Image: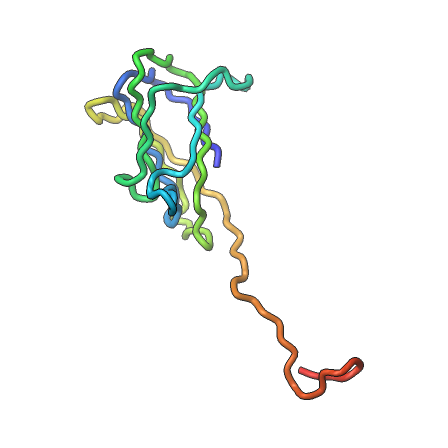
Length: 148
């Protein structure tokens, strides 16, 4: 899953991004109990990656269906910087209802005041048939026979 965002406010030490996925998504690694693998980067426009954003902490345990990113770096990231997050997620079995199929983004300062917020429609998940099986039943199973 790749998330791109441009915040209209500079990113300063102690700022937090809260990102919540649609209902049913999970960002917790089932083996370690921590967040799934992730990579957080800053980009310039549509140019290639300039460099990884350092000094971040990512937690998943206190945000329902999402995660929290806390920036502890000393450098201020200018307003308008394009941020990209690559994170692995476990999709639910089917798409959430249209009422619950939204991504929610918050940029908070260190006092947890909202600096910027946004919503985005979720994507459609194509359910897959589970535990399917095929079995030839009936007594007529020879080649050329008609059976059920």
